[in-house]
Amino acid sequence: MSVNQLRFIANASFEAARSIEHDAAPSRGRSLHGHSFLVRVSADGDSQDFMSLKLRLENTAAILDYQFLNDHIVEPSDTGLAFWLNEKFADLEGVQCAVRSSYRRGAFVESDEELCIWQSFRFEAAHWLPNVPVDHQCARMHGHGFEIFLYVKLGVAGEEATILPRLIGELKAELDGRTLNHISGLTNPTSELLAVWIWERCHSELSSLLGVTVMENSSSGCHYNGLAHQIWTDIYFEAAVPALPSASSSEVLGHSYCCRLYLSSTVDEILGWTVDYGDVKLKFDPIYRQLDHHFLADLADIKDTSLEMLVYWIKEKAISDIPLLSKLDLYETPKSGVSLTLSGANSDRDFLFP
Image 1 (spheres, one colour):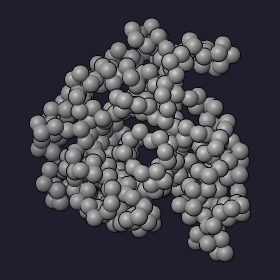
Image 2 (cartoon, rainbow, N blue to C red):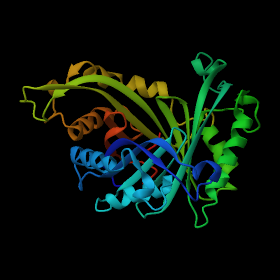
Image 3 (cartoon, rainbow, N blue to C red):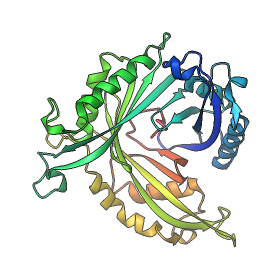
Image 4 (cartoon, rainbow, N blue to C red):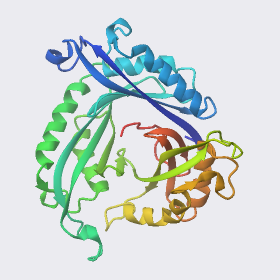
């Protein structure tokens, strides 16, 4: 993605039943069953505006709502559904389509129409970071409910769909209920080094592994693609905006916004992380205080309060104090909004989940 590349992200949900002939778990997949599906589409901003993309996706999802998917899609697996969705949006530049059939699994289609799957798992573990200053909170023994996401590109035979659940089971058995520092290779178990450890465990059997995401909590995470790290942290603020982007509108709306800050850098050889999540939030705090519980049309130096203008406004305020900033997402509703790629981003793909 190019510098200052603007992308829009929209999501929609629907309820549907299906029967999957070639499911990796045929005893379950071939029987009639249903899901609450979530679908997401991202596309370059020069080919579609946010509201049009959002409405278009909602209308597309409505086709499948309360339907038997086999009546619409020959093989309505997660990958089949993602490919069907991709065909509906193939006219958009840089489009990527993703499907989630449960909290723990889903699929997405790359812009080159290659199919990918992802699965996640959770484990509970304790750790401490031995190389941080002694007065840092992470120097103390503490714990997390870790969420791990694995993304894999499917080969012709699709054997990855069978290998991935087995690897996840092995990883969970090794990590769950443990003190991570006591596991070989994890004496300094930062999110970044844990992501590398998991990558090395999986890549030998899954050469098509695209990435590993490690989340210590619901509002921050670390992604590793085998070459470089990218961390993010979510900052929420409550704000009001005119019903129309123009500040002259008399009607006022409100949103619970989420601003996701991505930072890309090399891992510090001693500390084992790219940057402290807490430091990022401290540096963003002056901007947060201008946004939270305010009428955004009153912001200085802003043309209007559209998502596009707001994300550019945040970038201009943040870039000098957070120089490692590589991407900004601004969600108006959960995971639906605008994404702005800056310099230093280490991936040209959107991992739309988590």
